[in-house]
Image 1 (cartoon, rainbow, N blue to C red):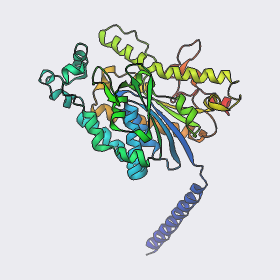
Image 2 (tube, rainbow, N blue to C red; image 1 turned 60 degrees about the vertical axis):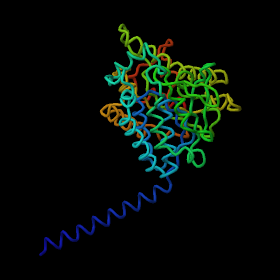
Image 3 (cartoon, rainbow, N blue to C red; image 1 turned 90 degrees about the horizontal axis):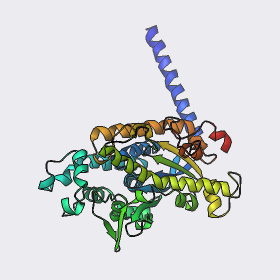
Amino acid sequence: MRPIARVTRVRFVLVSAASETDAEQHRLSRFRRHLKINLALQGGGAHGAFTWGVLDRLLEEEHLSFGWISATSAGAVNAVALASGLVTGGREGARAKLREVWEGVHKAGVPDLLRLNPFLAGLSSPNALAHVTSFLSPYDFNPLGYDPLRTLLSDTIDFEGIRQRAPVELLIAATEVATGRPRLFRRAEMSVEAVLASSCLPTLHRTVEIDGVGYWDGGFSKNPDLVTLATESPVRDTLIVELNPLERRELPKGVREIAGGVNRLTFNAPLLRDIEMILAVRNSVGGWFGTKRGPQGALAAHRFHMIEAGRYTASLSDDSKLKPDLGLLTYLHSAGRTQTHKWIGQHMRAIGRRETADLAHRFQGRGGIPASEDESDSGTAPDVAASRA
């Protein structure tokens, strides 16, 4: 009987110790600093599943909340899914809503559009679709204007709830077709049309008209808008989720590769312009320790952080953005969670204290050449924390 009695005593001690540990962790959590951060979500078609993974992991951090969200195209879809989920079910509701939306993206996909048109019925690959869009407009191959994304958003997103009760402000970018200028749709005016406008690639979708104005994809003008976010948001830290690789070393020679290169340069240009403006303002106001008054001061003092998908998306074809394959979505979601877990461990404590993304190094490098995608996990140079402390 002695061994049984000894085991009983050990079990009592272990349970007691575990209870004390839980109580200690609860006491410590009461003193943990609450963190708040803005989000800047880049567009990238199906590659936006990486951003889904980022948000999914961030939502697990109970002491982290979100301020403003600036987003474009696929980033806009993630933004409204996050906002709608927060309204209806808090953090877990947001995680569930993001999953619901991306599972819906996979189930709808491009094939639903193709099946409606006998001419395109045999086309189910992004390569074939890209070939067709090179000589037919969406007004030709989709005369009924069917858009599976509209159906998905209407069925899953509570836009009225977002407008009335969302705990985050939204800046959803679209591009005016007539002028090329950006149009930012904010939380109070959020609608399915605003998100569709932000996601409207003119080779695939008909122009989205809102109040008599035609809009194309926001990536042509803001991808996403960093300047408005940094100057207007009361939250002074922003996490940029960058989907598109800044550079590809191989020289494009084929028709598809050249088209992909044009696409990458076109949709990276607005982000690069915003970064250049931020760096120029910092220099003009005397650097990091210069005056912080007014919009320019707010822009110069804003702290940026970054999680990038380049190491994962650089190896993918540009056509993969058009086909939401389940394997691809799962892979990118997992990659987003992995990179975010690393970022949380390395940089989350810097929120509210210092910038962790060295913008000059990441986007300009030395001699004006963009820094390599392989130099860091999060766009952070080794000495940036020390230099901005």
